[in-house]
Image (spheres, rainbow over the protein chains, first blue to last red):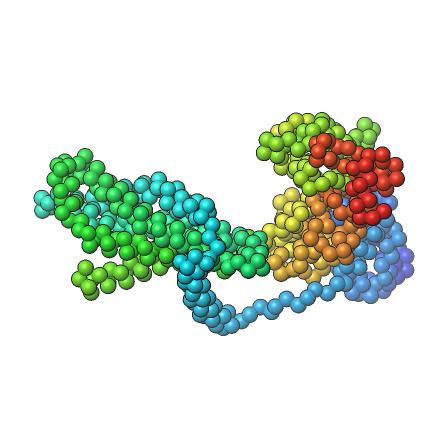
Length: 375
Length: 252
């Protein structure tokens, strides 16, 4: 049977003596206040509460927390509490807690209704759209200043950004593109084999990669890699007030931070796409030669004849648009970030999700336009 | 009986380094139970590195730190973690978890290391927040309160488990004089009521004189401890010009 920590002594008239026994430590457990209060409440004529701690051993803030709530309840029931029997440390802590407990907090905003939240969400989308247009305007103005040589531009940082957006991504782009080429070749082979036309795998892989897949795969990769890193980087700068510091110096953060990032990605995306195209074709070539037994020279000639310059331009237009989308999404969400750790995470997620959605929409639009123009 | 004479913290022949760069050599000092010990020194002298070593976040280059005679860095990881539970740390920026309310921030150590029920944890949290003057702010998130309040909330979290030793990293940094004074008073109250041993890293003269029982002066140039003692006594008795210069910088 556990040791009883509280003994309530009603022997004195209208006075309840609370005798505390044993250890009162947070780690060893403390009695529940409600159970004690229920007992205190039984005799209706109690007017005073006193304490006897002669049987008590060790204590910590577990005891203070217990007494803090017990005393509060007693005061609520108009029972006078005499702290004299408690250790002086406990008395001091109780006095300190009761003094500061009187501070009234500022009002917190009331919980909003469902309809208000739905309306806020829609208005939020509209506001975001306006902010995005404003942001695009700022990028245009800053780019104009850069072209006219009036913008503050750090070439060292720009070169580092080019490396981050290009060379540093080569391994991942190679891996993904070769695998996409292999997948395209396998899918094509299963159907074309039925007609004895396996050699046309070269056409499927070549046109597929160069016209859309190379650009799209590189773009999705860069959205997850570079777009996310732009958002996190700028979000953290916003949280650390680095962007505020730039503004107070009269330097446009868009000019110094956003334009170099957009420019770096717009330059590197077409180059990465060309590289991805080559790697994809290589993937198809490996499968065609090794598993399907095609003639390498024949495969290469088919690729050359099927992939026209028009296909290449279409792919490069895709990549140019994707570069703008990824960089703008990353920078926009980073610059919009609120000042907390979770907000940086949210900004990064939004940057990637909005970039990927925009890439798919842009692909659909470009494909439709090409179809209409007969390209 | 021997247990009582052992200092709460003993630092022996400690060498501190930061990214292979040695910032402090051969540190030796001890902190008695219930003392408020201040680590003083210019920026970059290794105060924060020393704090990281003391709280078990960074292994020293050489030497040892003993807590009640037990060498922290000689223990296995589990023992170290058990020893770290006896520490409370108030970080310079508060380091509250931003996605938690103040109540959740203070409750987490209690949920992890005690068997208290949900209602009991709430009662303890309420007391801790009341002790630091934040009653009624339990449902607020860190970003909804001021810097001074964040620091006090972080203190409530640091003292959630009634630690034997509480470490403060620059408690006055970024606070107005009133909040700074309030925090100093809280440090004194915690020592006087709970008997906690307190280590404060600071270069705030007002705080050093207001709360310090003992101060250790670290010097960047000699990379060593140049003086140790009661700050008020050092101001009168120290012969070292560097100590006098530091202590009188704010006006005697």
